[in-house]
Amino acid sequence: MKTVLAAFFCGLLSLTQAQKFEGLAPTPPMGWNTWNTFAGNISESLIKEIAQAMIDSGMQKAGYVYIIIDDCWSAKERDADGNLVADPAKFPSGMKALGDWLHEKGFKFGIYGCAGRKTCGGYPGGRGHEFQDARTYASWGVDYLKYDWCETGTADARETYKIMRDALYAAGRPIVFSMCEWGQNKPWEWAQEVAHLWRTTGDIGPCWDCKPKKEWENSIKSILDRQVGLEKYAGPDHWNDPDMLQVGCEGLSLEESRSHFTLWCILTAPLIAGNDVRNMNPEIRDILTNREAVAVNQDPLGKQGFRFFCAPEKEIWAKELSNGDWAVCLLNPANQPAEMTLPWNDLTFLRGTFRVRNIWSKKDLGTTEEIFRGKIAPHGVAFFRLSPITP
Image (cartoon, rainbow, N blue to C red):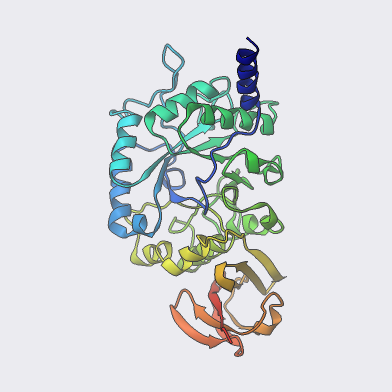
């Protein structure tokens, strides 16, 4: 009898301890999400078209493996047993069939839920249904859950997200857990044991440094500025998330899209695209699939970059890489082009001499013994990889 009771209490204790599937996100997740371009105008056929376009464009091969269906995928009500069900008009084959199809194509299946009673779009939320929903997601073959924070009332974010973390663990299927509570409760200070990534700000808009059209959205530059100081909280399996990519979306110039992508690579941010990849031009495709840029983001050392220097006319961002390499971004934050210089010996974190590689031009520029000089477009960047020269 004592043995039985001991086993019971041991099992009960395990449910109260931190339980997160480890090793699912050793580098930041890469994929595509429906929201930025399509919002609620989604369907089974759209997802399949996007998936095929990602294969054809080389995005899947470049590492974009998660396809995430955001809000508005479900029916307006749960079924008679309280289960979530897909909107039959949008997803007539159901979510398990769609997940199976994505897996057959080599993708991983992501879906959206919400910690409140309703999602942000007014669909059934997960409050009070966490363990039931986790079992549903697992039965559908879900690999990634984005979990929002609408209609939560006075709920405590830390405890609420722990419930879904434990529910996912109990369901038994390893699922990347993406917290989307908009950074309101400083999740970087406590979410490492809860989720694999967490939002650090409100939603991102397709706007570099202006007021977005939607009141809940934030400009890319304002989100960038709010990442300063957060680098110490990020690492393998626990990433700061400054929100999805607006690369290639209407509202950004080509230079702004390139800068946006560069800085998200420096930040070691999740690279979740949101453009209409079926119709993207070659320049946007080349940004998203630039292997040297992606390699900076996906570097196995897993260190988030930091802002080294900030002035109205120039910013310098840097990221330590494996094997002694560094990535450096020179940003022109101004609204006019600028002739800019970068004396490498000003970067006090560097030790010794490095070979310099321009990531976007794909050209070697000599060594750090030479000063970089170049003209940089408004809101543009120069992006470098530095590799140490062994004596």
